[in-house]
Image (cartoon, rainbow, N blue to C red; front, side):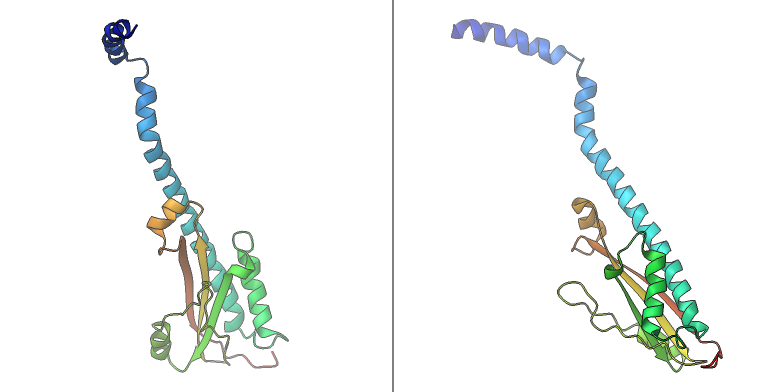
Amino acid sequence: MVMKILRIWPKRLGALLRESGGGYALEFALLAPVFFLLLLGIMELGYMVFVQAVLDGSARDAARLIRTGQVQIAANPQGTFQTLLCNDMSAFVGCGSLYFNVKTYATFSAASTGLNQPIQFDNNGHPINVTFVPGAASQIVTVQAIYDRPFFTTLVGQYLGAGDNAALLMSTVVFMNEPFTAGS
């Protein structure tokens, strides 16, 4: 029985090696993982850039309320600012994942120096040195909207993220408040 198998085996192996009907399936099996990883990477990166663009627009809209003095005269200035920022981003980001840092400076050069100070994060990834000071009329203000965007695909996140499977997205707006009065 063993001798019969040993005689047939080389013939069948030769026939299997000459067979070309499964070549396409084999090529697909070899290339499909690379193709799908590349496709997922493109989709992740495209969605991240899209969320960054929405974050930029939301930060500008919310900063406009500070620049015109509408936030400063509101009953709850921080709540008014946060509501507009969150409403603009709510389709893409939960409000609990969105942070903001609003500071006032005497000059634009002081604002530039202040923006060079990195935002610190706790062990859970939440910023710890953020403030909300919208300032008065004709003061220089910086508004930073911050979102730590998690990746859907862990493997892609390892290469595009900062090692924690997330990318820190930040939008910064620097402006001088208009000369508004507290009663208007």
